[in-house]
Image (tube, rainbow, N blue to C red):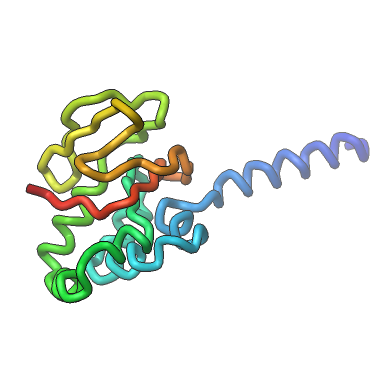
Length: 153
């Protein structure tokens, strides 16, 4: 094999290896640095392995500032109630990979089982939360950042 062919083969192999090790939703959120409370909540609910799974998932991820809007006593109680915490967190997850360009207004079924309402008038909202950043891609789905924690009805 010539040096050129060897070099090309090495570059292609490195590219395939890098693509295979792209960060999943959990690692992507942790690396962003603004989802510490979400990461803690996912651990407390035992959902880390699920969101590291094959997916694909669309996650409406509340930032630390969004969690700060929840009264501390309510958040502390939620973090101690695994069943309720799991319901709240899975309400933020939709099956499939839905990019911003594919978002349509209407009801969307969540992993939790309830429907959330997506509106597109004057910006995208999920229930009462504003989508503030879109299309953060991960190996197993996509994250859209929201400014509030949304609660299932």
